[in-house]
Image (tube, rainbow, N blue to C red; front, side, top):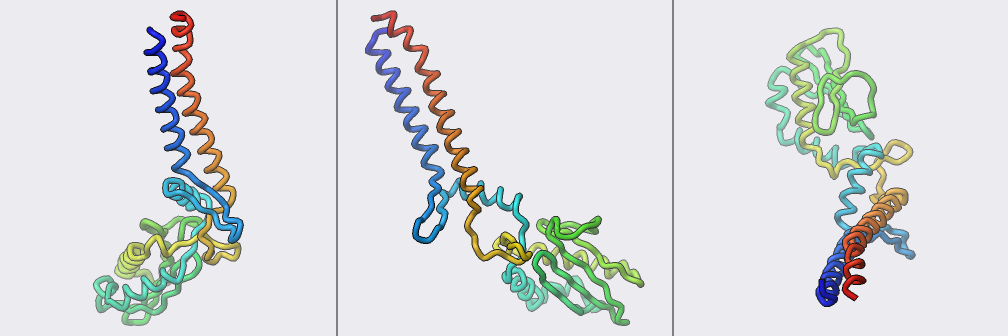
Length: 218
């Protein structure tokens, strides 16, 4: 291989390597604002950190969850489930659980709890996308009440958006601060360094075989 061809080949590899490093390093720019202490994360890293944060940190319900349930009830969304046999007796939205209680025409009450995973022990009686369903013990079992409660729980589970869930504070209430913990930011930075180093090593391995050719031609 002539020296000119080798030089052109090496240049193409170096350009490709540089583009790779720039692209990788550009996807994650984590920094700290010295004035406000805010962490800024690029979009791909933001999505990764959000998934990791959801796995590692317990989630709590925000007031938006109660607003979504209020809108559902006000619009008559539970009427097809309750029909004329049951009425809503009580509904509570807590930090990580939602409680619903209904009663029949003879004033027997039945309840169900929607719990975020990890907030309630025991075997659930049903499951939605976000919540586990736990039927409350009753002295007068009613299969129709069980069906109505599980159906209502599924409706509740479906109308609560992801934006109504936030990272919990130490007191078990929603944490208003949406910034990511420093540990997650540092973990992301370490990943970026590893990716960049891997790209550099790949480029060096691609270029190294050319040295023998260049020495032989010279």
